[in-house]
Image (cartoon, rainbow, N blue to C red; front, side, top):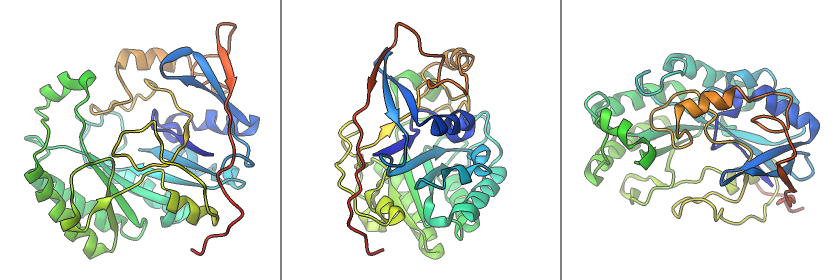
Length: 310
């Protein structure tokens, strides 16, 4: 099984102590997003976990503890965008995160760290020219520390419509998207990086940009040196090409304060939830109690005995 940690919150940045405690205990209780009283007991032993996929904007707290993952395979999706603190309120500076990116890459290898430049949006401050210049600047610094960049364009979620209105963020036209992507394509070609999209339906093949995969069967097979029997994740959006995985995060638990975040519906709820966190608990929030309905998640390894030829 592939473990996603996590699309719902930044576990490496915020809950790495909890994660490593769960790794030692061998399981985690994951709350059902649609029913707060239902939990899945997800095993974390190396017999069933084929690979961890970590998602983070600041994995610094995890870097010095990566030796605790020596019995597992993993890679990181590292989101690094050039917005200021009006947009990404509580993140370290871009320069600091570039240094963290390099440090992580030096530790695990550039093939195991995917750079995410997403989401892309434009307004009076963050113009097309801004993105063209920023992407060149960051790419020139990361070119020796990763092999691939994944991009996406901002989604207009109903629960943050007021925020988008306040920052004058509107859906981008195909013309605007292609203007940016033409520039991005030339930049990655210069620095020998692959550029892919995430869950986008627009055709950018004219710029040598194809539809990408975040929980990537091919990359995982390369990392674990073994073939996988895995299906497309039916729980994701139609344009998402990710393979099936189990996410161990919880929504409304990230205080980074990024205004575009789909996983945060209410900032007050985030701070109430954070107060419930105990790094020693099997749950990300609170402790098991008599009202919890806990079901053992049926899990099995997806890897076969067939070695890959990477």
